[in-house]
Length: 149
Image 1 (spheres, rainbow, N blue to C red):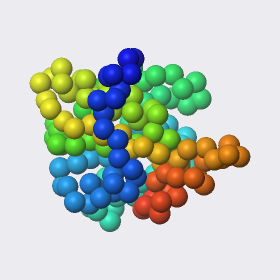
Image 2: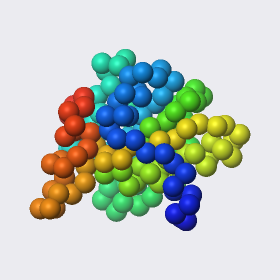
Image 3: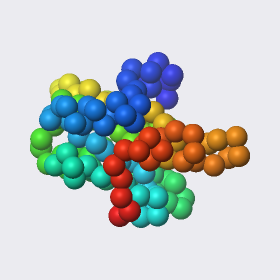
């Protein structure tokens, strides 16, 4: 994938993503991590916003093989209701960036214009100097609502 393609996806911080979800009704959050991550690490909790996170794996654990049906599964989860904005979340913001691009391209090919936004830092954040996540940045560290699934 060329760097130019990926750069057209905008990025926001986890706090900005939360603010968008709070303030803009026509927005959905898509968590692209693996089932193992959802189960062992936790998930965003949007119940206080009367919303539900959409869960679609970008890649499957343990092989981390790409999900060839990712785009179709996202569209199926949206159930025909395409919002104005889609926010994408993974562990650190890398997989979600590629997932956002894939969905943006798919929707564009269908003639739909949707703003696909990557959540930089992701759910667990970047590695710190000791090689650990969850201590430098990310959704959880920033105190945003989450729960064990």
